Length: 420
Image (cartoon, rainbow, N blue to C red; front, side, top):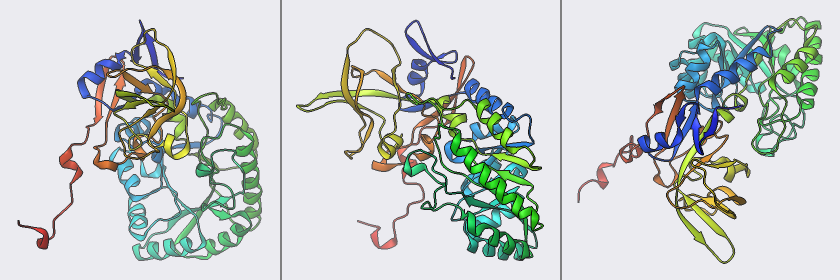
């Protein structure tokens, strides 16, 4: 569910007309509903009330400080994959004892930062990484809390670019290799083996892949226990999908019920890394139509938001529903909603039936709260857009629109290029 709705033909976010925000901050902009974010977190957290657990929001989905702070105040932690995400989580007030650090390419500086910050767990993704973290922890005179991220070779039945649990993917350690690596980790003096982890993919709309992965991890954990290696934390990652179009993903309560049923007999704390399911439908991208163009073969509606603002349609062929900010009688047309970027792949919707939007109109690109701003860029030297949070009848700028001056921040002309 979400709190975007029409009143008298006008799109509102909670109790604020979207048009009012556009008149104040300009377009394009991302708009998030506080009520939706809070509701989604509480529903997801409640789904696991019967089992010891920590909800670690996947920062990669949406790293805005206000959103991280909201989840932290509700008791959530953070799943991070970089030093920058760790910095953002700490700045937002996330308890480091609720931060787990995944990712295949942690460098030495990032590892030191995480160790000094006192995070809960490193999810290690290769045999060589064991040695590197042990070495750095030794130099700091600490023990690194670690889990091994297992690649269970499960097909998550999702887009290949967001599948992470197959043998051909770069993520995790082969489940057959894992026991040997756990033995090795147990022997290293500056590691403390605490957990097992997996993450099989994103936008998964069936329960079976999650259950299959959990069964394989349970089997591994029981085998490790026989060797005297106790697993305190089981990190099952994220990946639960949302509805963009016609998908029918499981409700978090169904997801929780199925996992808890399978977890019976395990004495450990469950770590969950929801991302999209918390923020995806809580946000929209609002863009203004600039022009329309009728060609021999195609009809184009040209807007001021492009692939640099929302990359998912160009990158994955993803579907986002389009809604007029102000409803009025109009025909439908088969068209592509495209942006101003100099790429043929610059589109927000391609060859789809949509309202016949006209120049000057505002269009809401729905379900854009996850992997929207966080994947945006300055391509074509375009400033990144503003982000807005609505709470009840007020709205707040939680990120200012970038300026042209900020585009060149940090750049310097060498002496030989200075002068006339």
